[in-house]
Image (cartoon, rainbow, N blue to C red):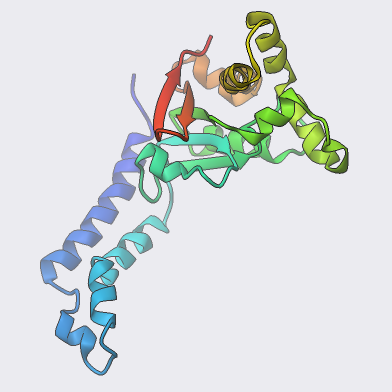
Length: 233
């Protein structure tokens, strides 16, 4: 199948590579002696450690002309997650949505930030892949299992109600497991539920139907920094 995004992507990445090659080829990065001229001792080490600031600057200038990310990455706001580290991606390769519990509300035509961002990523940026990435020890999923004490944060309480179908699935599938296992299983079922919610979005439904968009479910294990892939229904 022809990917109409490839010429645009090649143009953007090509511009970045060309800019980088010009700088490296011309040896335009200042030497240690030039950097140290009239500056305190320590600046030499800091500048060399950054690997050539001018080369990187031109890369960013080229990227500023447009973006062509490889995927939309939907994950939790948890501070222990770093999307670019999890995916081993660089600048311009990832379009990101972060919120408590990596939740995707079912499609609603009213104003809603997650829906608008999904629509832009699929319809305008034409990302070929959407990943929903949950993680172990997720506080939002723990709260979904036991919402006691959430009365003081009503918006949080209402937000995690989007995980209720996943919680019911865990109740049905694992009625006799302990609290820790329930927590782990809810993380998984929640990812699958949010992928199901994604399919209610018109652009997502259209592009997946034609094979132009792939949906993936990931679980990031905080304990090991490993990613487990789920098989969406």
